Image (cartoon, rainbow over all chains, first blue to last red; front, side):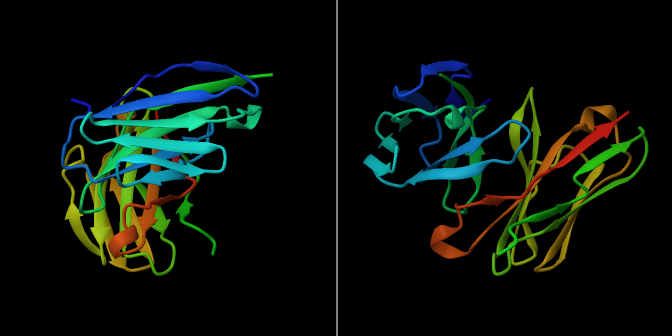
Length: 110
Length: 115
């Protein structure tokens, strides 16, 4: 049974709009959360990490964490065609082990 | 830094053959992870090492799979004998120790096709 759940998409977003990606997790032992971006045929690339409740902003990306609701989200502002990729949510335990979701495919349309 | 290096990048083999995948982690990283990615099952952790010692191999699918890390700069994942259902992309990742160990850096992957 998957412990990290994401909508598979595709999520179609007009260029310049905000893309909103959601992730839920079942393991309350998860202490850290990550968003990886994976282009087709490429390896996952870390874009955001978040460890405490609230928001964390980095450029056009904002990660949000709510541990009480076991919910993580990623907002991509001013979406660009180069943001078209699959976004993987992952939860980490105290040993550094990550549990990945299946990923959400984002398609930014010009 | 060159990043995580994996070889070969592509491998095509026949069922029953032995397959060996190789990984060189980022220098100074103490953790090394092997993942498998398929459309059906997504990204799955197979095994990970800390300071060359296997810590958790609960994700290794069966005895046909084995992994070693003889030193800090080299690891192998071996499948013997290989089966068509082993076809997948295999990623190696490494991370630094202590507070940043959840920050994993992935190699380019090995795309394996077993006929």
